[in-house]
Length: 189
Picture: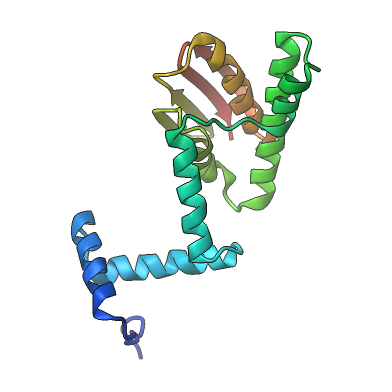
């Protein structure tokens, strides 16, 4: 009878061990925990079809985009803006909402627990948000998104997108509010 998971010895160059030790100290974690978690995430990346190198390159590109002020805009919305096919603010907001529904449906079909992915999704694609909080209370969930850089005019399209994502996930929105830099949604899960 085994008392725990069996451990295997893996040889790693001393230079790498020193770098791992430096990072694990900085994170305040044990080297074995850091290595095990890193390897687990490397396997996860491979399962997603990315090598660790590709993931690092992608993350560097995203970090550059973030530093340069690039923002996430769904393709339909971008086409609407560049082609001038949206003749009114209402049409543009409708495109944002419809894009959100599409993203929500994708998250729902792609992940076992898509609501858990919603927070990380918003934090990743909308780095202009300073805060994203999901609070569950029974079958009701409250979502709060805060941005110190959004004006009232730029908050509304993002609010429509987020509302669309929630609906695409299959939830019923009870309350949706937005003001300059603040989005509040309450929905039934």
